Amino acid sequence: MQFPACGYGGGMMLATRKVDSMVQFLLFRSRCLRSSGHFGQPRSLEIYRLHCHQVPRGLPIVGYLPFLGSDIHRTFTHLAGVYGPIYKLWLGSKLCVVLNSPSLVREVVRDQDTTFADRDSLIASLTISYGGNDIAFSSYGPEWRKLRKIFVREMLSNASLDACYALRREEVKKTIRDVYDKIGTPVKIGELTLLTVINAVMSMVWGGTVQGEKGSDIGAKFREVLSEIMVLLAKPNVSDFFPRIARFDVEGIEKRMKNHLHWCDRIFNSAIDQRRNMDGAIEEGAGKNEERKDFLQYLLELKEREGAATSITLTQLKALLMDIVIGGTDTTATMVEWAMAELMMNPEVMKNVNEELNEVVGLNNTVEEFHLPKLRYLDAVVKEALRLHPAIPLLVPRRPSQTCNVGGYTVPKGAKIFLMFGLSRGILSFGTIPQNFRQRGS
Image (cartoon, rainbow, N blue to C red; front, side, top):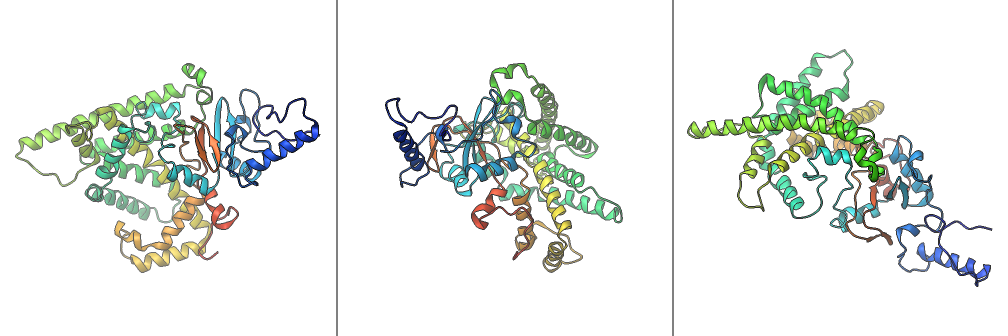
């Protein structure tokens, strides 16, 4: 009788040849009980011996890649039901660890955030982020802390966001007028939302710099390029799973991403030069004040500062612009489309949302940002849509900077950590993962 292996490959040797079969069995069972915590001892086995039962096995060389399917997050959720909230599998030559429990995810993103601060960067993401000079994909250290501090305290401060409020409000009103003119005809929510979000972000990035027809042309081209960038970022790349052949760029993803980067770089350089010329003209005009201040102005002011603790390089400036453009558009548009779809499929929820809007905002008024804290039911609807349809179900994979312990298991340095976000958040509260849109009180 054969027992399931405790580790990767051929399993763990339980005893020497001089030990009889009964002793082998007892040793095997004791190790299994210790690893599962039945003896009350900490589970200090390495991730390679993560479970006493068999972990997801794949094929030689390619590992579990052929069995992932199109919905990777649902495949991981199914595997969690078989192997538990933490398990490992091989994707090509990459050792991956999947965390499918809110408590384990909390350990990574809160309790050991410094250890797991680094992201497991893909070739496409490193290319589009100017070699990892942005916030999302740069390694944890002084430069990363400086960029994050600048982004959170300077660009996303209440003062800077309030300065851009008129730009956002104007784009939203344009969309409302567009929808009103199309009453009685089908409206593609996804395309409309993406157009609105991109125009709003573009206005915030350089709304006071690139204006008029030229700004509209750049926005239209950016929508096209952005769609292609998002496809390349989401597309599996064989070079990411087999780093030894990355230099050959088998699928051509790196080359295509570099082409998009060069186009974006030309736009950024043009906007930067134009802003500098505008600032020079303002100084010559006896300090003429501008009514609006965009993000590009803030970044250029930071670049001109003296001192490495607060200043940024030109490459970092453009990488931050790329973060804003990519991170603030596609995911937002995707979530709005899913939320609208769920509202249309749940008329009772839509009725409640309309009643709240009528009560808080009024029939003849426009929803403003200061209304949002009072729209609690709408806020709950958006959060439910985020839970059921997370824009990035696995988030950006993490990579521990050193060997560490998660949930009693030792995770090796350099492993690819998948954090199951969204559906897994229902495990702790409901016991099971609800697959349907949940109304209030249901």
